[in-house]
Amino acid sequence: MSSKIILGENQYGKAEVRVVKITRDTNRHEIEDLNVTSQLRGDFSAAHLEGDNAHVVATDTQKNTIYAFARDGIGSPEAFLLRLGEHFTSSFDWVSGGRWEAESYAWNRIQAHGSEHDHSFVRNGQEVRTAVLVRDGATSHLISGLKDLTVLKSTESGFVGYPRDRYTTLPETTDRILATDVSARWRFKTGTDFSTLDFNKSYEDVKGLLLEGFTEKYSHALQQTLFDMGTKVLEAHSEIDEIKFSMPNKHHFLVDLSPFGLDNPNEVFFAADRPYGLIEATVQRDDATAAPAAWSGIAGFC
Ligand SMILES: O=c1[nH]c(=O)c2[nH]c(=O)[nH]c2[nH]1
Image 1 (tube, rainbow, N blue to C red):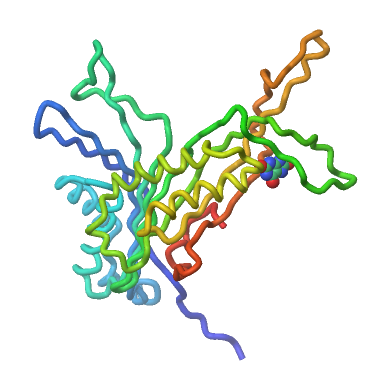
Image 2 (cartoon, rainbow, N blue to C red):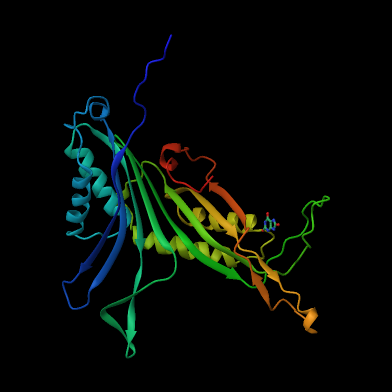
């Protein structure tokens, strides 16, 4: 007996809509720079099975909606995604949910002649801010985050006490460089009234806590430092239920300068780009309700 072929899970939309919004009510302009992806979920079986597009809100329309909504201001990536999600699910009966994602790029004002310029900006070379909204009917999962936040501490890190077998060559050290590119995503408690949250303030606060957590204590391993970073965020933010990390251990190897008759008291390093350790973990509240639907589609975290 042959099995029946049916349509499984599906979503569709416009990916990576690059939108730059300049607010120019005064001579002092503001810039918001986003890369937005919109994907709708719902009853799209006729399109897949019969070629009937009556339910297919065109990806071109989704793109246009993003630009049109930006005309009213973006505010924060999270608030912008929440607006999009509400719009598409309330405007089309058969759109029961979707997934909206954004990256946000920060710009600083150019310092010119001792003051910050009104309308000239330089891209902030630090981290990229991220946001994901997954909506299913009335349930919304919201995840904020960042990636490529490169940090390094030049001491107060070591790695000892690990098992040694016939393949172990790594020398123990109590003083090494610890460096990583922090990728972190934190999920707001499902059911939170998102309209009460100041996402920009909360983002800056979480980023500050992550940086403090990275540096505050002596690191016995990147794993321990990761947990410290997550703990600080969850202790300070009751509205966040879990935070996931993916962090490369960017090894810095001491260069042997003895062939040149020189010592090397932890001063000259070879910064290897690969291979790298890859440390991933979730730090969560023990009473948090798991939300696998929120995380599906986010690559690179465990
Ligand atoms: O912080 C570290 N964690 C590890 O798991 C590990 N493994 C390794 O070789 N060096 C390190 N450093």
